[in-house]
Length: 280
Image 1 (cartoon, rainbow, N blue to C red):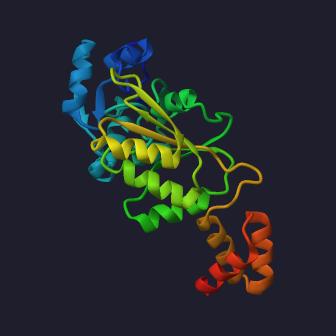
Image 2 (image 1 turned 90 degrees about the vertical axis):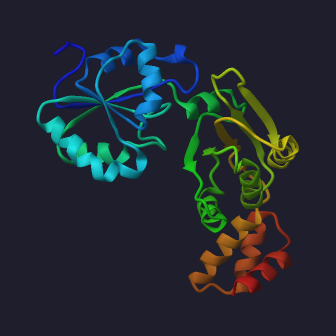
């Protein structure tokens, strides 16, 4: 077996998110050397592999079948094979297939080795113009607005920059959901990062919503980034509601609770009280 890979080892290999020139030399070497490559979509991956003369056998590991197929792959690893996992773009297991497979490998004592490379999250964050010292990755928001709002309520108070993926078909609606849940914060839409039509749109959530709404059709892969909550910033209605709900659940008196929340949130106390009454 070539020296670049070891038996009974799963390699998580990052692939280009757009520009093929971003493929690392180590990634190419590993993919040529392993016994098999598990792909999110073998047809999609074959284009990339052929571009670099990688003829290693492949097998399919789509998200919908990962649970059913992971056990067989783990057994191949236990039998001494070396395997690589790649997604359609970027790092596997990050909002892509792989999380279940990695967990089963770890539980079974199988070695897992990352081969890092392109990442849409890091690339978009670095060029967004938003704070980069701390960030919170949300992946894709849930499909329903109620579930999306519940997730955003959990992170509304974070000072870290929020990063999420979204499809071009849903981005206009999602920008409104973000504004309603978080307030009209500074944000960035990173579109087609590293590709020919790469674009960074920056502004408030309402400004970005207006810009993309005017286009009619939005195309390409998207990363959305939203500024974290700043000290002293006025709370969104979702944040106030969450604080009231938590206090009421603890049995606190609404009048006292409303005054405390209003002071912290920068809201008039009567508005907070009325919102609390509606929650009761």
